[in-house]
Amino acid sequence: MTISQAVTKRILDLCKERNLTVNKLSTISAVTQSTVNDVVNGRVKNVGIVTIKKLCDGLGITITEFFSTEYFESLDQEIF
Image (cartoon, rainbow, N blue to C red; front, side):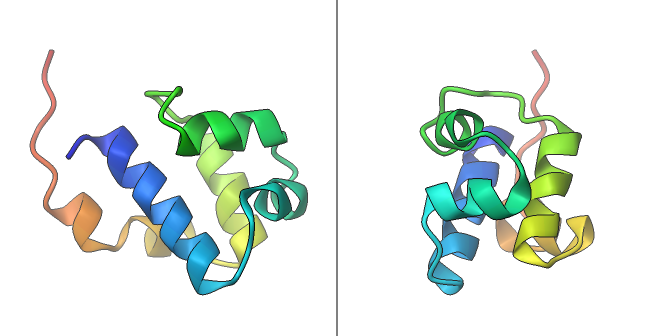
């Protein structure tokens, strides 16, 4: 799994846990819907930390909580 795939899975999991649509997440996070859609549909490979922070704020979690999952703990090193 790549980091962009891990970010996508984490966002979708958090939305599901909170019964949120991607549209609602974009609204409560002040991130454009097109940006959130691009992230969850894999069109953005390098999500900025500012965007992730805004999403976390909308979800009511810290960045540490966002990244504290097996998705990120088991990532292979990506060197290109």
